[in-house]
Length: 234
Ligand code: ADP
Image (cartoon, rainbow, N blue to C red; front, side, top):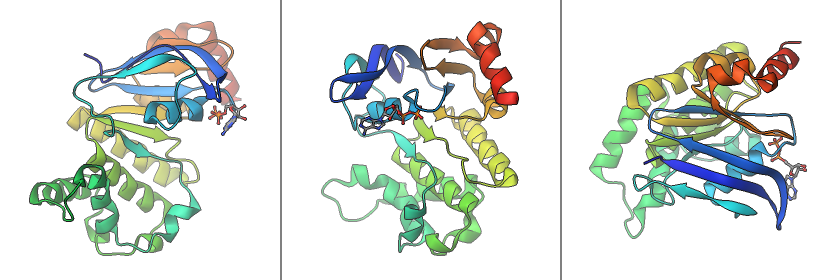
């Protein structure tokens, strides 16, 4: 069974759709990129997947493997995240907060998992530092480790490299790909960056006046894919 399956979904606000006819499936190990012009509804779809707003029509079904509150989410880089008066360790462990319920402390297993992701992200030397003192690229890696703590089965990433310099962008893409390959974590990523989308994704969801969902190879052969790639490469 798929981790997420959306059928004939319309997303929007207060009953008014900004995008219709969205259907897609995310399975273990998938790397799905959501592309489309500005204002086409990508962020609205992400909010709908996260359950922050209800679908206008249709539904999103989450597989048994995924609890309702189990999605690792990495928002766009924002200045507000830089003011957390917390250490890197604390930020990463806070990924488990959704599972704490009545407990006040993180379990040994949670601490071990956090340590595993810290190592995977290559951020061991940053552990004790204040989050606010880190560079943009370092912050995104920390938030990626936190998202893995929240859910190692599925990560939802909203333009995660925006605002980073080219080297930091490449580094973050590599990290995301490593998680996808090694842990079979499913990735759902909004991206404007067609080059990297083509390098890493196995599935594409294009939303706009027309909607495409399918394998990357089929998108590239489609009229929509050709037009999109040409426009982005201009
Ligand atoms: P994208 O992420 O593809 O750039 P968005 O999902 O942000 O697009 O926006 C899709 C449309 O929804 C836009 O026309 C935008 O103005 C509108 N929109 C975004 N947020 C809201 C909101 N909170 N209430 C009503 N309309 C919104």
